[in-house]
Amino acid sequence: MERALTRTEIVIPKEVAIYKEDILKNLESLEEIDNVKIKLEDNKVVIYGEPESVKRVEAFLLDQISVSKKGETFQSHRVFVFDKKIVRILTPGQKRYVEEIEKNHIVLAKGPAGTGKSFLAIAVGLNMLKNNLVQKMILTRPVVEAGEKLGFLPGDIQQKVDPYIRPLYDFLEELLGFEKLTKYVEKNIIEVAPLAYMRGRTFKYSFILLDEAQNTTPMQMKMFLTRFGEGSKMVVTGDITQTDLDIGKTSGLNHAWEVLKGIKGIGFVELTEKDVVRHDIVKEIIKAYERWETK
Image (tube, rainbow, N blue to C red; front, side, top):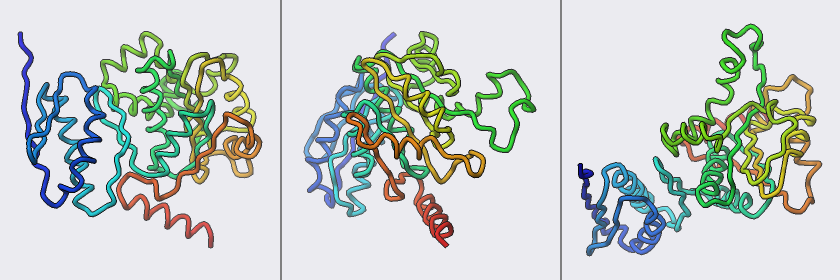
């Protein structure tokens, strides 16, 4: 049975025609998408191929045109192409973040919610996996009893910790789709587990992400960082304004930020509200809390 194919045409508006070459340059990075062909015909882009792939490219192109219509300074944004989504690096801070991950062995990143700390790290890791630069991905978070005692929650230990690590699965599924993610998990190519499960292990040729690191203690952070092995890359992310540790306890992320400065191969990135890529109201919420905290 032949696969159904579709053809879509998108006209590049006159008001953004000066950006046409830049837009098309960005589209060149999408040529690795399977089962889709992209070409320029006069003032329109023609996309032809399998419906799902065409839909992703169409959404990306319309987003590019929208940015140009708003009168924003157009830049060629680097993109990562996955089975279910095209990820575009949107801000200078995000660009530096990705570059630091790629050039260092270990990167520590701070920043408020919505800056893409976790999502971009996962995108970089999946891209490295796709290009055979690593053999495995390990994603982890500390399990912190934020107002609830694990012993009083229903279910077995896996059911109890699942809510803490579920957002990491959601990110992966958004990029890979459920079927491919399930296959990777079953083959142990991708592992998602609580931080306590990292003890006593050494990770070689792996991409390892420690998310929500503001909720680690200095000892937990040391334990995690010393899991680093040959051919691996580590990323540690967190928002120091949203710690669930008991009052007075030192965050492992803040502690490592001070202790590890000056070590070659370890990068430090601090994202700000300027890098927030969620709804604009998220930026305003962050600013409001910052003003309140400085009173």
